[in-house]
Length: 135
Ligand code: 5GP
Ligand code: ZN
Image (cartoon, rainbow, N blue to C red; front, side):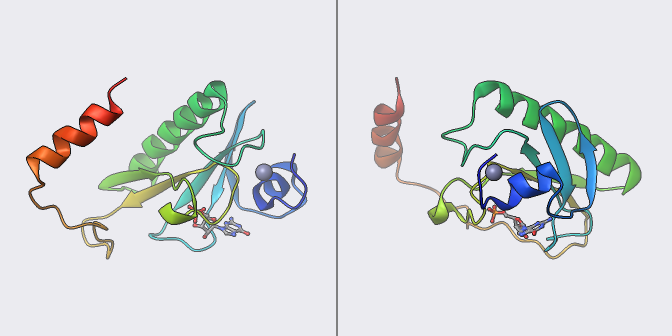
């Protein structure tokens, strides 16, 4: 529990939410600004700021809970597809600094767009960055 953390407050129950699922390590609830009808968030109960900080066990549990929710969205909401999204860092659109996965049901006619334009990259640059990233 981190004081002043919105999602810790939701996990604890001091901040109201439309909770839809929970287990030993995770809680899932509806996003108040849904990208599509059904947009939900899955968080670990234990506070960690982001993807770089979260413990492997909590990441695993949160991912499995997101999968469970995705299956339910297909069944109950008749979703045509699902996006699972994480924002890590303000530069990557993160606004709440308690790790969370967005689980967004997608519908053939929904208005969401891919946030980048796929176009051929520079092969040398791709290879140079791959060299840097290889461990
Ligand atoms: P981020 O921008 O960090 O990836 O995602 C934070 C998400 O939390 C946003 O989609 C935002 O709509 C949602 N959110 C912000 N405040 C609240 C709140 O008080 N309750 C709920 N349920 N969701 C919230
Ligand atoms: Zn927190």
